[in-house]
Image (tube, rainbow, N blue to C red; front, side, top):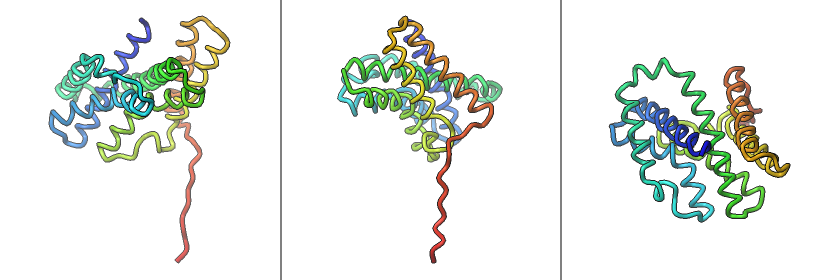
Length: 205
């Protein structure tokens, strides 16, 4: 029940941040809603298609489409106010990342997949929606930049699987890794922690 509530909060927050990204690209209202739905639900959809896990979440729960589209429209209507809530949205985006990651890992385990694929299932669920948003908005995907994003997802998934292996209490096994991943992501934003970069300049002429 707790993780479902957090999931609903997360997809709403992701839809709202996606709506702002669409607005920066001067998209119309339909475009805003499409970008919001793809961002909020795209990670799970990519995971399900790759793993053959059907029906897709938004097919099974079409109300999620209305929820994310509605959140996008509300965001568009009150966009000037949203600028004052930048820090809140960073927090909610980070929460979405860790919640989606744990849910992705749970889906992988339900399908009895190898541990490596379970971790990838979590990372895809957490990150793919943002990648689709960035590609459609003609931005370099956050996943491919120097920010600690995919690494936070992998850390969260690994901690979750470790907690299950240790047979910790179910709530502790779920909330503990998510809390650690959330704190790590926020600290990375606060102190500008970055992944090592590969810089190559071909000077041959």
